[in-house]
Length: 223
Image 1 (cartoon, rainbow, N blue to C red):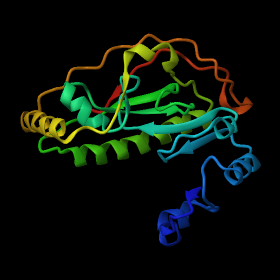
Image 2 (tube, rainbow, N blue to C red):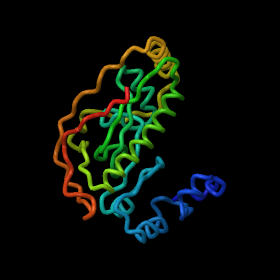
Image 3 (cartoon, rainbow, N blue to C red):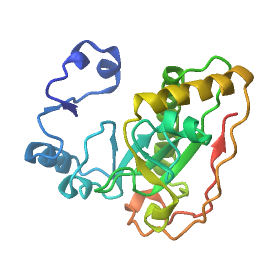
């Protein structure tokens, strides 16, 4: 489903090849969107927008709604998380998580670190995050389809481990850019992220998705 103001899909080869049904909607939380989604009886929905979804939409799929985030949750929620992580000297990565009614606080099902290489900028790192997020999302979906065990971080138990970040002020962004130049120029390694304890995940599963989740979380590294 796409916002009604977006028409580029009509001439986009990707949609023509892989999307048999494309619907335009005015409101992701509106009644038309809700009724369309319910008519599909979905197990999982993949959400690629940034608007906050309401409970009437979140509760539709049997398992939940998955989204990709360009930061390592739970520490980096919100926006501009790549420059914020560089500014604080923390590792970069992407997270695949379930959506809840708040911002980036749903259970995390997969994470992967982003490698900083010589000459990287915030733009190249964001491009890398987008590509990595797409690949990781596909891996998670394949695991669900194959009824494999999924590793989970229930963030509601780790709410004090992170914070929500907002748009970075230009003055701090310039400082973060200088730090990035220092890191990417020398390829200095960023410290590894902390290990978070795993906790029981209570989300109900559809019958064709496997019996349970495992709770031994590891962040995979493409370094």
